[in-house]
Length: 250
Image (cartoon, rainbow, N blue to C red; front, top):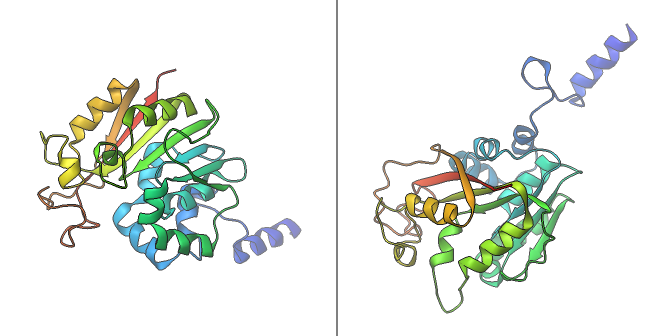
């Protein structure tokens, strides 16, 4: 009788968090459902489907994750709550991304990050992450930037992949989400539209020693004809996006 009362109290107070058929709640779903998340994050959830994306990439408790070019930290905060006390997230930005995402990042920092999310402000080539210490590297809408150049932006893809490969553990995951260009588009599309052809991206990444292990079509948008810049108000936030998973060869 006493144990029955204790169990009932835990359920009533929400202390016992259960999912379907009595299992403990999935940590990804729990992170997304956590109270206190901003209205901007909840709005982004509806179009980015982070639960399905993070499940696809295999994010789990205890992982060490590098969120490369994290911008305002949307994914860093979520993943921090997923990997828990035994995990860690390196929330990386270089100077250009810090400038681009200044407002959203300031709001994120003011609201507070999970204690296991470590801010990493560094240029590519100077990340300083220990070799074979990372389980997953995440690049969300930033891979195409490796092939873009401007007065305030230049990243050498070879240097970046050298650091990523060294940081990842054998069998570690490289997780890519990016804006799709029309099939067959040249690499210069990254300069004009900030998009990249999915097949070109896949060929490039596999040529750098990674094994392609699958894709997710959840972020596809057939209404996007791939002719507009991703910053055009008519398509911003609604682009056709590809999601690909790679692993580092053991």
